[in-house]
Image 1: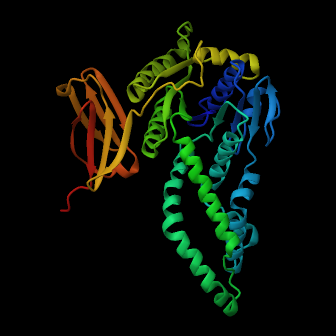
Image 2: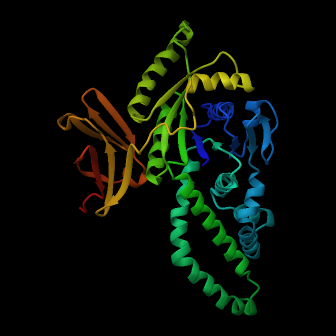
Image 3: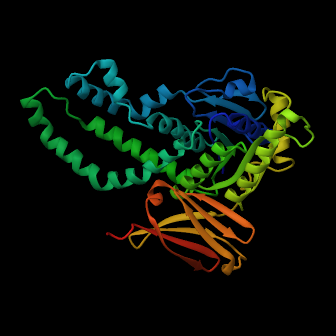
Length: 392
């Protein structure tokens, strides 16, 4: 069974280098490994210092690389629907080029790229699939689409398709407005089915893991926290955090001391925000991370002797579930003195103090506008209930 490991994080944190280094380590351990970039602005080939194409390209023994062709993926999964929508916009008077661009739904390019993961997994040709995601946590938010897609496919889609079959001939007889035919509906159906399969695959903790790459800087850590919250909200398993580009302790320079102090401060925040996930701390190297020797050096710094394909953390540290008209945020806190727990709320941030330990959680938008109604323990799990404020 292949393992899928996705690396996500803010742009510029070194996510592509970490993905490439992980792939090199997996290949060196004997796993048939492919590393692919789903970012429209590819830089994966630059990490290996060789050109990569839209199909798997050999890099080293047991190692292939791929930079997904977004246009090809879009045409395969959305082309038929896009042609219909752009025709409809042209009929309404839009310029043909504008209509072609406007008929692409927000997020479709990222989703089309991510669907390549399912194809590679089901091919059975690889033991490890390493994914360098687009440089934003928003990419993974689009993976919530399959939940809505499943409902649409079972509840609304059959009715709309039947209505189109009945009303289509009548509309075409009275006007020249483009109407969707069976090929459009079949294309939508196949896309939704593919999205559902992708969701099931990436949400399976035995098959897939998401790892967050960050630098110990305030804005980067906050975005990483938000990404982690959304991953928990949508049920995608996160098993590690990689804190990259840390200035080594051996560096003594007055100019860099401010950066070292800042990294120490926000490094402590990383520990607070993501515990008990394992946090891999990677130094800032004295050379650019380009080519196999440097990538092997980085892999050694991240994993030492560890196998990257292993599940690095089992279970979810937090979950968010609907409950009694609101939501329950559940946070596992084993072996905690309950009398020492103190909660604080600052905007979209929930702060949990336990003695000298602090945990900062960034709330998703669905919770940020709600009030904390109550909190308590269920076994070793802290449960915080959010609900709408009472009407005045």
